[in-house]
Length: 338
Image (cartoon, rainbow, N blue to C red):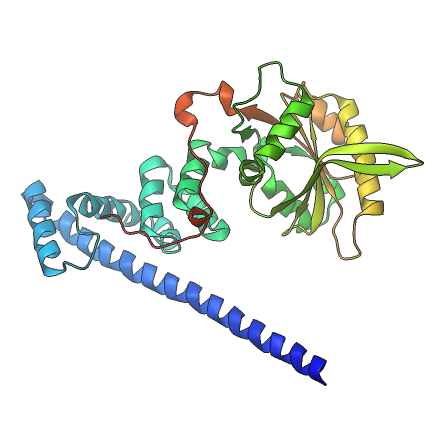
């Protein structure tokens, strides 16, 4: 009887927590939308009085700060940001709609750094869906994640080996190239050194792989007929509900890499895959690849495999480097620029 009550109590608590979390999201969305509507209104007035030049903005900033000393967001800089926001959103309703989902600081970052409306909408939607913090979003823009996640860049056989919607989701998680911030490697590094460096910076690795990856281990041992085989990196993807096997190659793609990956996936599906898990997916990361070579290799492979290239930031311009976000920055928050 006590156990039953405990189970009922736990369910009640869980239901309450779920409702609280849903309400927190609603409160944020409503507050954020109200703030954006206010800024849009103020900006409209700024544009309508643009004939008075910067004096109008300067005087308005002073007046609003004096009238509302406990409110932030009325600096000259932020008033100019409001004007920029209005000029862009008034021309594209889709941008305005997507902007309502994310904080003001994130909106201004996207509008400043991204010049194409289609890309802006993509970054806004991805920020909302993945909970990107400010620094994390800046990182995604600097590394041009939009271009690296477009379907046309990706080489895989997911359409032939996975059913919908699994195949579409699998294609969404792929990038090309992957960019890893590993500056400790020598130029003539070996695959083992790259693997250990990625594990050593596992937070960085997970951020680059994307939302949903859960690290299980490196050099993961699989034993068949008393013979051991070792997977470079093994992950479980929470959204895809499947294991992700990653093999690292510091050379150009070779067809035999896919045969080895096919072998590993068969073992993982047989030994690790649970009753409710989807088919395991393989990802081969190479220094470089030839499109047609990969396509012909994957054509008759019966396991889902993707092939991407990777780059290390030590070989990229210094201005592309930036610090990783803190744990706090991975959570969305309302951040009003002064």
